[in-house]
Image (cartoon, rainbow, N blue to C red; front, side, top):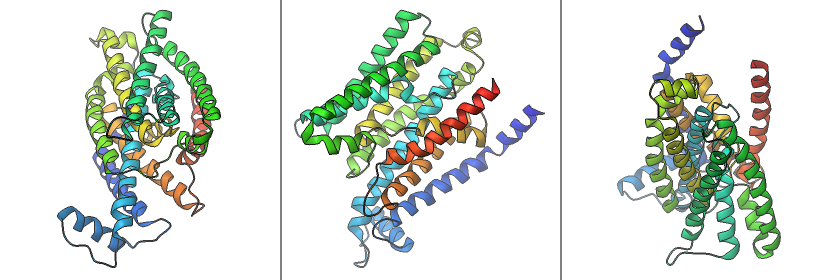
Length: 347
């Protein structure tokens, strides 16, 4: 009976994905329209449509607000939410732990440390004031991944998921302390660093949109390619190995891909918590546990969730803007408790 219900749910997956895609489009339009300055739906669509086709935009439309401020921000938020949710779904499938997400490995914290160091020291690359933060975040993300995997391998040569999670949690706690220490001594940048560590998409531009889009296309393709292997991991590593899955190779490829995607997101928006933890569970309730359907559904649901969180952060106390991490943490903390209780009850 349970299998029949699951098959019935998967039969309607195309409709579910179509509804998610439509919901994402409508949410993006809503986020462009709503803000400290209200812009009508017709003006928003007209401005974006005319800009796409190189047509003149009527003078009565707030062209600068729509095209140069809100649209790049909305695109960055949607791409980041999709990327973080996809990483969370992949990590939960890989580690077979419903409380796992990309930050469980400590990669997110490592990338945040690299970005904070770059911001505190003013490190830049020639010709690019932003490139220093990005490169440093990526380097620290890779370094964190290498360190965590090395320690896990030293403790357990099979790279058991429990070892990776334990070391990742300890590493995250340590890095959080180091970041707090850096912020304490970087008095000239304390306010901006504190705000950034909680997550912020303020001031993003189309260069970051293109970077996020490229990273999501490449890394997303890799993760979607490994959907069958993630399904095999659901029945256990030993069983996956017996049916021909190269367990160590799959683990390393997925971990590296997740670290790259999280590193790019953190370098642009700072640390945004709980998206990768909560949204894969929502997607799993909609389309079931099959990763061929779960991963695409996580993309859409993560983008919608982070868009709504960013809209709340921008408008709740307008003209004051909240950090987006505050909103996601409040929602995610409540969801974390529910997931934990359901997990214990299931056991």
